Amino acid sequence: MRKTVTLLTTTVVAVLLLIAPAAECQQLWAPKGPSKYLPPHKPHTKLADLKAKHKGKTDWREVIVDDEHLHSAYVFSPPGTQTPRALHPDTRAWWVVMEGEVRFDIEGVEPYVARKGSMVQVPFARLFSYETVGNQPSLIFETNVAGARTLYENKTDAPKTAGIDWVPVLFRRELGQFDKGNRVHVTFDELAKKLDAGEVKGTLRVVEDARGAANFIYGYEKNLPPIDPKNRGHYHPECAEYWLIMAGRIRYPIEGQGVVIADVGDVVYVPKHTFHAPRWYGPGPSCRLAMNGYPYISHLFDPQPASK
Image (cartoon, rainbow, N blue to C red; front, side, top):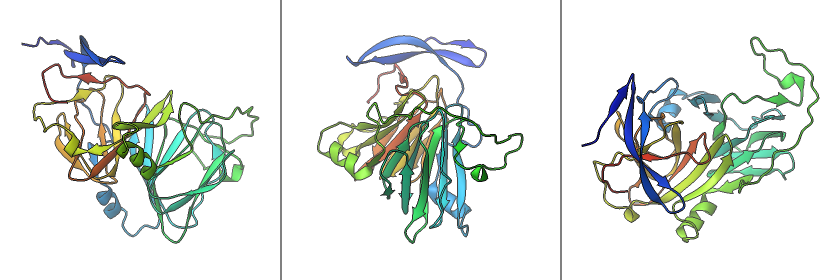
């Protein structure tokens, strides 16, 4: 029988820690606090519900994630909408184009048009802007590090913000690099092809930063073992994790929430200390873009025997 020690609202539980690269498990004791959802976070944000909420609007922005690590929002824009030329002095930003066509102009990179399934990023200190082009609106999922600041090339572009004065500064810029495998632009089809060909199994890193990461997790339910209803999966002790569904469907048993089935464009969010066990679901290929605040976030597994 498993022993538990309760300290205030935190329970210390036995977990199995996967030790890389040997993939061996070591049993340790870890803090397990309550699973708390604080606004604006929801276990499951359905894209269909967002579209219904904003029906009739020509442009809108909806914040989906705003925790201590990352900030993500859905942004819907009509053709001709262009962001001002600006930069983030210390943080990396990335986008997923879900609908329409978006022309990105990033310092040091030839401008290009990103379409559905495109994943784009800009490192710190590089000027950038983007514009919805073509004859259809665009829908993008935009992410940056929590609390990121923006510097504008022109004062007239700076938004009026309570308690903030916009002042001229000299910034000795050292441009952030596309290193650690980060690429300015990759596409869903490109990554899926690599995984289908067996070049990589299951996961591809799309964004790697000291303060944030995004993983492309693609595959088929037919290649998984049968569902084990007793399998609680794992939790993360220091950071929430969330996923943008990019293809097919994903099944999520989530502690305290039951089973969530998420479709393309939906976002699923789990706070830290929350057991979850995502898996590909349905007859065809499924894909989720996993995001969190650590490049190598720890996974603490329930020590009870269960299927992977």
